Length: 316
Image (cartoon, rainbow, N blue to C red; front, side, top):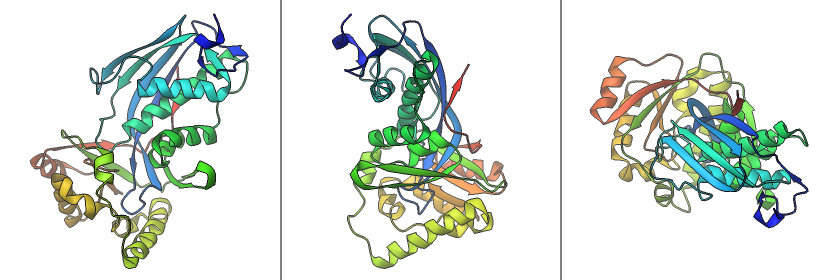
């Protein structure tokens, strides 16, 4: 079999063995956390699992759970593309692979499903390389960089790689960076998930190219406070989750989400739009109960208590 038929690095000197298999579990995430637009993220205990087995030729995909029947089952699948990119970056190739995805993270709901797909695929490629024993797998820094290239920004991707909460930023020449925060032990999270979906591309298109200086200063202060609230002073979470850069501009496209955020905040809960929506995230120091669940149900949302998750992991 020639190198041309291989998947991964076109110049690979090493080809991974047929039959090698790995399994990966990757968490979903919430981005922005209110004011931290494209730079704050939080890993959530809603997990997708995937398994990759090296085969004799080509790419085949099987999907169960979320989006089954709505995604391509060949090399065009997002996870499959990420596997191939990870192999290429590692400088190895495979003759083919079979991918199995068990999807639990809701799609198009602002809970990081696409970032998790990319991170999971890259982590699987890394695990295959490490299991082969010929060279080390990818570092966390490489996983953040490669997954962020798919996404265009690192907030969701870095949260799924590193776990916990993350602060992310971009540098020159397309470089992406992230640092993990050690959360205050009392911080808990709750998500509210609707049945309706939303396009990140569509809601991002509602954002203006310029904002008033006062709004920019407001968000700088609240994003900085967000780091303090998450790590040392959770009593500041209500103020730390205020935003003027994106949520109001998206409100018309997400009426139920906007109403739920406002109603929860009126009750003293630090509620924000999760990513680009339509899901809602609440950060606090105690679990929510039946009153909040009933309120959410009236607006078409299901309340789901979640843990703050660790990052992507290889499982047996």
